[in-house]
Image (cartoon, rainbow, N blue to C red):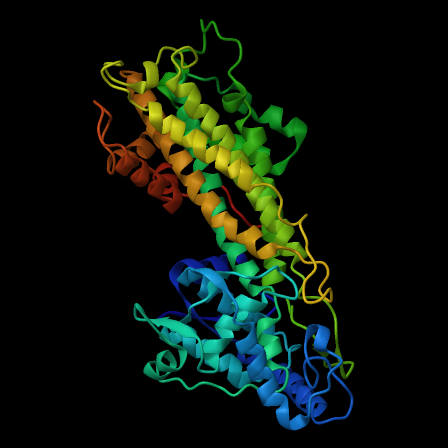
Length: 515
């Protein structure tokens, strides 16, 4: 398995996406070890002292005032993990669980958690050997950290819980043994350091971000095809319009669409003599809407990149000051806000794309395309119900896009009285991006049919390549047939970047900060 060396505090979104998509193993740069070892020694000293230090020699949460004898610190940490394994629901997808484990390594690697390096080495070993803890996807409110899901991850490290290895679900101890690994006995604060943090929520939010970005890029291709299919104008793409407003995303979306449509015979055929003055907003305002979504995704991406590199447990070991201090870095409010931003962008990309689908199937608006893009309409229904499916998914995403970060409820006997709800705010993103992929897949199917109806006029070179990519998987709709596989294949092309790669040799949009 390919391994990547990561330096805590400097990891990039590109590295995190490669880890997520390619199941890379990771090791922490050994230059980080001295700080990690020093923090662990400070915790060990505190555990043997008389002063009460939260989570080191005290109980947890509302029980923080209970002092724990030094001889019980190992049992304290073990009990913490077992008692917090209260997750429910579907098991988290393997790639996202592995990303969560990497994020936990990065957080511990900052040298402020007091967790011994040998514990981190076991996590590295699990990633390398393919031992993936089985983590239920529900049970976290996003403060005090993602306690339940991270407890399920940690349970495997102590030989409890369950893990997946080579496609089998096994008891945690057995999975470790088969991989040649041994469970650890947790030292002072180590259980708390492992479960107190935002890594579950952040991993889910990153997974949603990575998929949303691919789909945002794909909308440039599907929107350009739709514009040609209904013989829309490219005048709204003129760079002068977008420069006068100044938003980066809007400027880049317009530029990408101009390049994709350059050389279209369909476009050139109606530059003069077209009775229409303006296109509907779903065509004319694509740069403004998709561009705003792109900007929003970039904002969320910056927040999540910072969070991925952060130390987010409690208490934290401040080595330079020689103190172990309670704080609140476990509160996942930044992640909750980022997840809400991603959800808004995904919902809006789908909303405007669905209107383009509706435009193409409506003969009163599509500029002479056949009703529902059907050959022999009446006998054939064409894309009639595919459009209805997009309406259903669009509406579902609108509902799911309602903010989660504005919700809160007190927990743990009112000790944890304001929580972020980042976990399910991030978890919904997988469902939303899957819905968006289908909406864009249907737009691709409709737009390809529409462009082919314009023959002998041809679209641009890049868009011809996009249609050829589709036609390698889905044949033209010459008569009604069983449609579900067509929608699935088109959605996969959109989500996989295959469509964008066919249309352009270079990325149409870049997620990072480079302008």
